[in-house]
Amino acid sequence: MSCLHDHSFCDPQIAQLADLFHLLGDPTRLRIVLACVPAPIAVSGIAATLDLSSSLVSHHLRLLRAARIVKSERQGKQVFYSAADAHISGVLHDMLEHIAEPSTGNEA
Image (cartoon, rainbow, N blue to C red; front, side, top):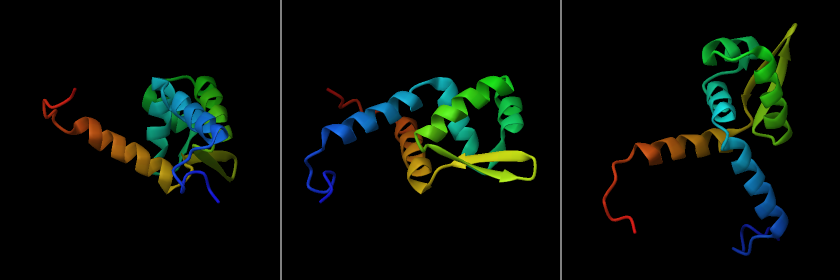
């Protein structure tokens, strides 16, 4: 039985989720992931789009791949990166919609 479905979260799942949010909490890594959401993109494309060095982008992509936030696919000599799955792109989309909503003034 999954800990998530019975509403009792397991400590290992909490730690893994916290690590995922910690990785996405870095603005550079978040910008890199968001660059990978619309379509697969190469390191050089990410670096050019975000005005970052390719080595910095590659370093962050290694961490993001290890956390299964992005996935890679080799096409010839280049490697293209994209969001790992619909869950990642969905969470990012939902959070962007959330911050775009006007404040209701009812926050405690």
